[in-house]
Length: 67
Image (tube, rainbow, N blue to C red; front, side):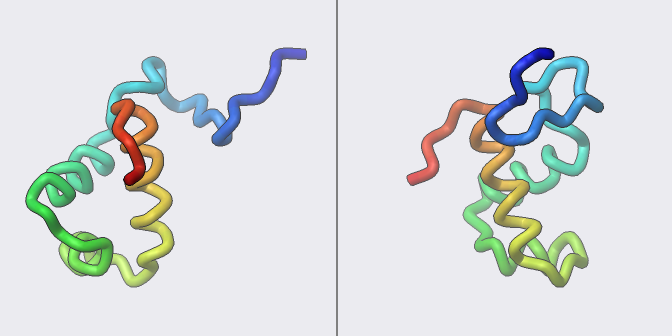
């Protein structure tokens, strides 16, 4: 049995480092300096925790620090 990915592999991706269209939208808002709350509002999402999770995944995919 193959070892599991540390952050829960999402096997939908052929290239796990490539951002999905939704992640690209979030990343664009991150680059504009938007807060998690502002990102959620821009996307019409009420769950800020979901935005946080997506930001962490984007940072991991792009090799960015979380600081």
